[in-house]
Image (cartoon, rainbow, N blue to C red; front, top):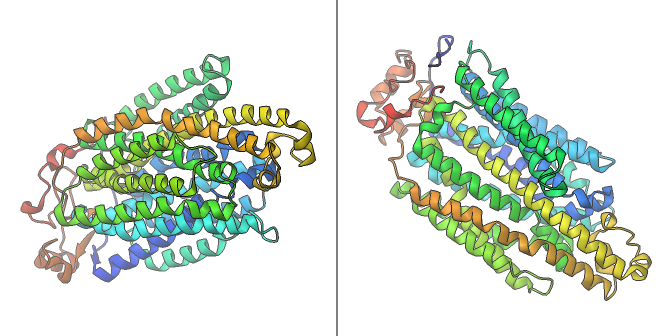
Length: 576
């Protein structure tokens, strides 16, 4: 059994007014805007970036580096936020992301660019986890669904604006793709200022012994897993280096479990995996993440090369997916708040995404843009039904003191799925693409030299557009033949996700925010009058009479027994 570390005496609880909650939410939206904008703005610029820096055969690493770095730090941000508070961590993550954008803009070769993308991931992973955990701190699960609307709007806005802006910069030589990163700087600075003044959260002083061994072993697990899948896809699953990475993965995984069993404050408490609903929600997120990121990562490249559109045009072609995502993310969030029911949404989402994947296996260079848009719209509808719901289910299944850890663990396994998916299927795509392009260029060698296309690594969309026939058709067919089959390979992941969604049980959504449940905050009388917490209890807490929450097994005295979650005694997830 783990020992709860002693903490310094708590200050008077924060009073959660509607204005304070809205200010906190505004700060989170500002931070998420800069992060989500960066992830989408690069999508339409990626073919030009890798062509300019000479890395087309290693294109998967642009996405993999970001995902790997963000995945590595997610559990750290989640646990440290639980122990020491989330405000400073969120601002540090935002500053790190903004600074790395400058480095990416100044990169002189492909290696430098990938490194800075990784540094961006170190900040982006923290913003994602901390924003979700902070929302759970100030908004009860029962009401949290309606806050998915503004968050969905931010993702929808960035997902539409990002590809368009990225395409605009890429298509205009006087600006260039580097402005895709320079634009993050003023947005990031503005988000930092908003967060500094608006993000009002309690600070904690904790004497917990940090789980350094857990951080090291978990990092080893994640890194060896990603490299194992990458090397397996590119060099063969029986290659010596691939087998060595598999051995490293197994050894580090065993070491991590042994370390976490003894840690006083484990980075990922093993007790989380005794919670059935948490495990199902996390596994569902991982399965969907594997397919989702793999499909979305390379679609803009396909649209630019295979469909012959410009970077800005391919950004417009991603608009239907974002419209679908925006619609169902808002709709499912509002419906969850009103009804308290959520199981139907991930179930329907898995079915819809799988149907979209099956449809996309028919993509070819001759597929009409209207058809491509319809495919992406259907995919967006499915994604919007799942993305936030699985996080809400995981948060609702655990005690308030573990909100950050549960949020980070849920996201960690989703990102593991995404990283593995991008590594495996990205490698399959790029390997097939390199072979197919080599064949196409060899068969049309004289025309390729005349067009200035000397190798697959130097191929950019402008060169494809300028190439005459039959070279252009050969290049288009190479992209189509390389990517279309990948969508079919992803279908088994969604079959697993469907089974997991069917096994989910609906448990009552908590009507008490995390900070209130932990005794760190109380609602003001206006909010309390709605039933969140009785006004007399709030008044007593403001007067400094609120008792401290015990070792987690007992619910906070700030809320009456009738409002305790029915399954609370079973949600003690401290240490394995």
